[in-house]
Length: 126
Image (cartoon, rainbow, N blue to C red; front, side, top):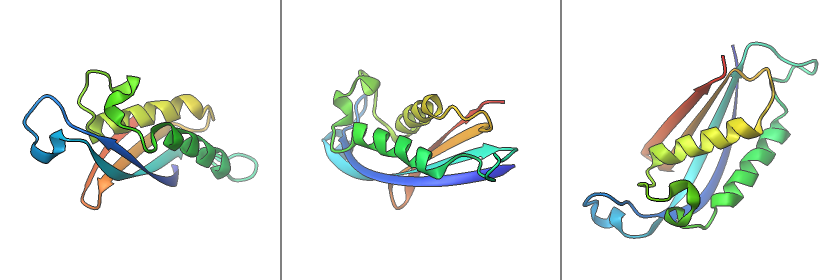
């Protein structure tokens, strides 16, 4: 199985809802680091799983969607706690919709919100 990882960072804000989260209940920013891992069994005629430039374009487009925004105000998070777990699922699903390469059999998004906390969401296309 081949794997390809591409990384993108951006800053966005959020606040947690639905509980007493202390300072996390007030708007605050994170420098999110998105690590996308694509998996597949075969390579194309150029020995690529997928063109990294195309993947970077997808990640840049998504990062711009969330960059410098308050996540709580976006439709994707309406009425929901904007946790990194939910955010990683939203990002992974959006990437899966945008990368149609048939060789890709799995996608995994690891989303870091600081140096010690991350969440991961995986999609299998098999």
